[in-house]
Length: 488
Image: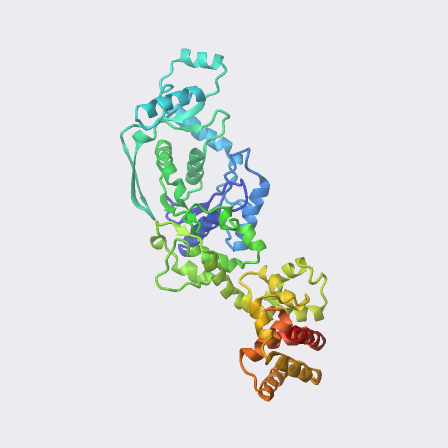
């Protein structure tokens, strides 16, 4: 076997690219980059009814968005193609014919009804259902009879019974299966299309894959695949089966847990570096307590011996915390680029945007950035600059506005604002502190009435930034409305 590490990610294009698939792709990518090996992408599209080019494009676009570049495979090319299974049927047929010629595989004419009847019989007898070998030694006369009946055969692999099927898994250690529980299984369906287990072995062997890193749900496929490797005389790669990603209720992740596809996180305004950072921590444990990793750090630190066999639980709050960190590292311009589509979608601005408006928006988004865990939240946080103050009905807010000091601070601040020539943050801060000192009002009894008057809430962006961006006219209008609320 080629000693240079060669790994692959081989998705089926049957729907949106799942976050679990992205984690599998990432672990393969990190392993290849850490080992200075090759990362390959191929498409497993033999499920003709469910596969689509649209899904294939979604997978490739998602991988590119995550920054998981590949050295060989679909779109990139290489010397081991083609890289789409439906374009490799001749290769599979040659391998199948080799097995049939050597007596290692055979045509099976049993109908589904016959197979099901025998399965029920075995279950009733307390046995593990496996194929009973009826077609293992058919005579030519029997074969002609079945053909005359119009039966279309499948191809089954001859599996020796009572032998151990063993391998050392990078994640799960030494694993053993008994071939008696496998039976002669189908490798080619009656329509001539190879089953997954057969095609994947031929592909991995012909593409010189050295390590197969995939989800644990494929663990049960491994003994069948090892039997195919042996029958074809191929070198067997090193396997590593990583845990499933579960929702917070420890059930398989699904729509009820929130977004499940990479595309959804992209549409919500998450940053690809943050998603990669978070996915790397789902099942892999770094040597110390570090949680924020650059890509170079992930490549340097990643190793399969620190990948846990325990199920990984998807924690959206942890993802949000990591994404929040990455968003805080963005420049004002980059933060606006990320959030602008959501601001436009909310109807607050329309494109094209003038340079003056863009500069104002940069400041506005920067003003609310401490409240943004992902891009889509910009619309609900920046609305304070565009909408009228909602009617205040919460008892806690009304109680604050009815404090004896509230109209005093609002009136004094409004009078001070009217007299201001410059209207920048420093000037506003100086003026407000002067108003507080003159009125003898401190803390929340000074800040909260002004904030409630300006936003209709006790929470929101930095007050001096808010006031600057609202502008003198709008600030005075809201302060006057606040004063009327105090007198109700």
